Image (cartoon, rainbow, N blue to C red; front, side, top):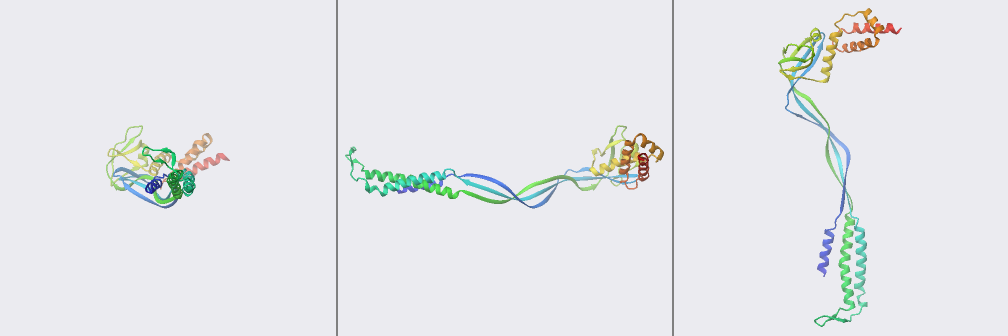
Length: 303
C-alpha cells in the first residue's frame, strides 16, 4: 500500500501540467552596424560634369553593392507559468487528507467486532467497522496527499521567468553602384522623338558634348554598347538643366522683349526666371545677364 501511494505521488507531481504564456518585450538598442555585399551584377553608369559650354559624360562599369543597416537590440522573453487547477487540487486534497487522517486516528473508536451479518464462501465474516474505517482512511490519504503535494508543487512552479537575448533587425536596405571602373564603348543617344543621332565613341571613358550639340540633339536616354546606361538622380538633373540652359541661353538678351513679355505674359516670364536661376548652378554658364534682365522687366511692371 505504501509503495502504491508513493507511485501515485510521483506520477501526480511529475504529470502536473502548467499553462505557459510567453511574450516578448523589446529592450534598448545596443548597436548598429552595416553589411555590404557585392551582387556581381556589373552595369554601365554615367556621371555628368559641366564646364560651360561643355557637358562631359564619364562612363564606368560598376557593380551593385547591397548595403544593409542592422540594429542589435536586447530582447526579453517573459514566460508566465500558471495552473488554474492548483488551488482546487490543494483544497480538495486537503479535505480528503484530513478526512483520511481523521479516520485513521479515530479508528479505535470503531468496533473491532467482525460483521457477522455477512460471510464469504470460505466462512469468514465481514470486515469490522474498524477495518472499514482504516481502509477508507488509507484510500483517502492515498488520493488526498498526492493532490495536495501536486497542487503545492504547481503553485511553487507558477510565476514569471525572464530570459534576455540579443536580436537582430534589418533597419534599411540600399543598393548602390560600387567598385567603378572606367569603360570605353559606343554611346547611343536614344529615345528622342526625332531621328536618332549617330553613335559616338568614348575617349578615355568620356564623351564630351557642347551646348550647341545638345540643343540640336533629341534623346532621352543613353546606351553603351547596346546596354542602357544608368544615371544617378543628381547627374540626371544636371543633364536636364544643361539641356534647358543650352536652349535658354542661346538667345541674346533683349531687355525690351523681356519687358513686353512681362506685361503680356508675366507668369511665363516668372517661369523663365526660375529656369535662369537653375542655369546659375552650372559652372561658367552666362546666366546672370539674362537673370538680371528678367528681374528688371518684372520689377518695372510692378511699379
